[in-house]
Length: 352
Image (cartoon, rainbow, N blue to C red):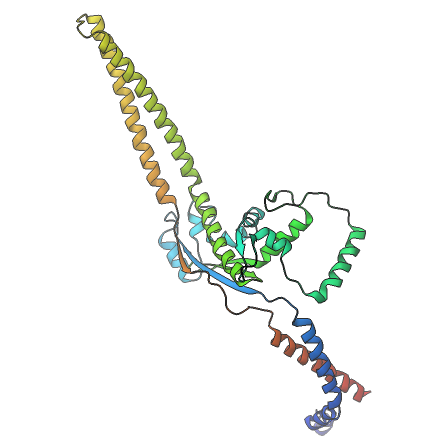
């Protein structure tokens, strides 16, 4: 019984496999030559792109869960945003990069290519100066023509670098452009250390580094504006109250001075009572002005405390080597893939 089971098992003879493949070596050489030529024709015209990174360490709010957050961070968790009062904490920064308002705010950045031949806005650079593979141009034209047969014409006016883009209502081309920017910029946050890593991809190395630094500044301004918006309103409120108190104090001071100048040598009791009344009102206005000035200074100190600080751990640098496409890996991968397909074809033909 055991001998019969062994005879029924299929045994792969590697020697026969090698000889079968070697017998078709001319076929493999032809396939490799054609694959190599076609892969080079396809991958060489593909525009190169570069990658630049910036790393930031944000100042954490002290209104969180205290020691509990430190213990949780040692296990890979961050609960700083749960116990604190900030609605936008570092873990939500990547979602902020998907906000149309945030992306549209980058369009006005002035960029210059590495060779210095072009200086324009980032929006105009994306719209009119992007390199594309010339081989895919007929396919793109054909796809646009076919889509135009089935889609209605979009009459929404397209944004310009001068007039800006309305993130609430965008033209289809502006929307596709915005989606492309969202794919080119990314943000990652380390849950243990809260270190923010901003990565930017672009076809020009200088524009790539410029945009990475600009995105970092844009993010800092957005977070500072959010963290200090309430305190700024308080500062404006107390500033108005302080100005009103100063005006009332000046009015009371002028009234008291005029009364005293007009009744210098008068000793009647009625005049003395009126003078005491004006003097009391002047003292009240002075106390009110002092209180408002103290409150205003305290609010300004709080505004300074609320303004977050960011430590740049890694600055943006102009990349030297492109990040992709990996031409050699692409060609090698296509050769391996066609070799597998050709080997399957040979074995199928032999089995038939």
